[in-house]
Amino acid sequence: MIGAKEMLRFFPEKKKYKQEEAEHAFDPTLPVPEHIAIIMDGNGRWAQNRRLPRVAGHKEGMETVKKITKHASKLGVKVLTLYAFSTENWKRPTEEVDFLMQLPVDFFDKFVPELIKENVKVHVMGYKEHLPAHTQKAVKRAIDQTKMNTGMVLNFALNYGSRAEIITAVQEIASEVKENQLAVDGISEEVLAKHLMTGFLPIELRDPSLVIRTSGEERISNFLLWQIAYSEFFFTKAFWPDFDDKLLEEAIAIYQHRDRRFGGVKEEKK
Image (cartoon, rainbow, N blue to C red; front, side, top):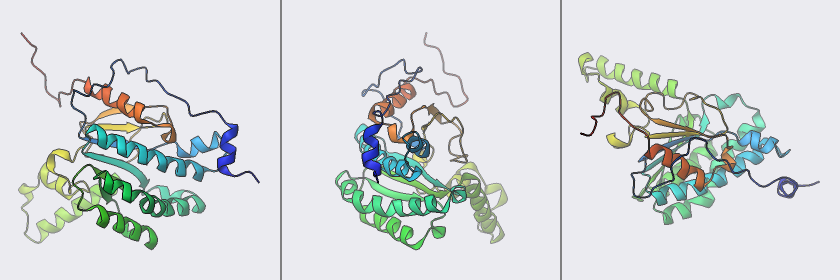
């Protein structure tokens, strides 16, 4: 029987995608988005296009995570949030879910030494208590081993759903009001933001400046609904395993040349 690696030899090299919108080249002298969030989509389709099992796409996708993490850190990104597993993904076939729950174990065991070398700090947000015990242990170990790092934060959204996140935040705020720890008129955007799962970050880094989604789909999929109110979006047809340093720089280049007004109007130069 031919294994997954052997089968790859019979299929074309990874496609290179050029964005029609990319009229500008990445400029290292211009600011890069401090917080980038990525919906890593298309692992399964990448594998199916090569007549491989879907799990082969997830495994290849983890290799892409390693490459993009290093490059984002090199470019000066301060927070990289990756949508790894949603609260809705439990609906997938048991075999695929089991593989995805083992993936963080294998990933962190092999990649943490490199993260330490790169000064990258691991954080995981989501309903971690519902993850299998071995996944929880791997997550905790990676967080503990990188907690002294002071560079980019690699933030995995694992068993995460934004609607559930907002409900949990509202419940926590309601409890504070009930216990007379917070007045009703004291509820503000800042209070709610602090109770969201990105509340561990400094205020200026909680909201992504740039959201990237791979695979050609153009939807949010219950990801950071509150936090992306003023984010810039970049959609690419490339499946996540095909996403590379060049595409990351393309996304940032487009971001660098967008006019971000946050609902206001910029004054014209006289």
